[in-house]
Length: 309
Image 1 (cartoon, rainbow, N blue to C red):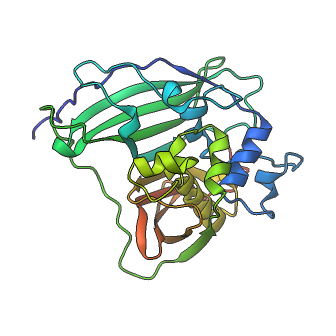
Image 2: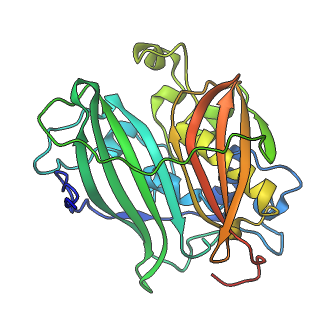
């Protein structure tokens, strides 16, 4: 059997990113992804079981430790990866995101020293269409060495391929079964949803400036792909975990089409098998019958929230 192809850039270490957040940040994030008033464990810091929403760490790749508005292109600029052409960050789109959760996240980073330790897993050439960069970011409390989660990110540099690099090997694709879904969750977005979500720390002007968005080829400002992704995570947690975010162990989805503020998201979910105390849920998210997220999969602990990870 042939050995896997080692992609250019594999193993390259990016500078670590210090991360911090407070309870207000946790409240803002939960509000921005559609948590409901009755889910006070996410929306009321006085709740005896107040908790950060479990997918919050994905915003830290943009926010870091900043507590005010930051320039998106300056703060997302990364060092050149050896053996790979330079990337124009203004033409980079999210491809896929996958989080594995090892420990429940505290509602505030106070008394911790968190950082994201980021490694390139490789860069694949897709020809004239572009190139895919995959990274791994591990959220670590450097005071204790405790790892809280692992985030796999695929980004697509549009039109920046064709430099002779290797192609990416095929990955496992999760396709829902051909039967009626076990649950459907509807999330209505508003014209202001992108403006609210960006306050979490992702200040890409595509999500607030119509002129910039139209120059990029869109009809107007677009919703953050990760907002749709996180709203879908909320749909799964609300539907199959009883609203207990600490039961979410893994969550992933691929970005397929853009969503515009004001669109209504339809999240269809299928309960699959159980293994090693985990319930598998497959899902897809659509707008007016068009998939906007696919390859959706979540793993949920079957045990109660009181069970320690």
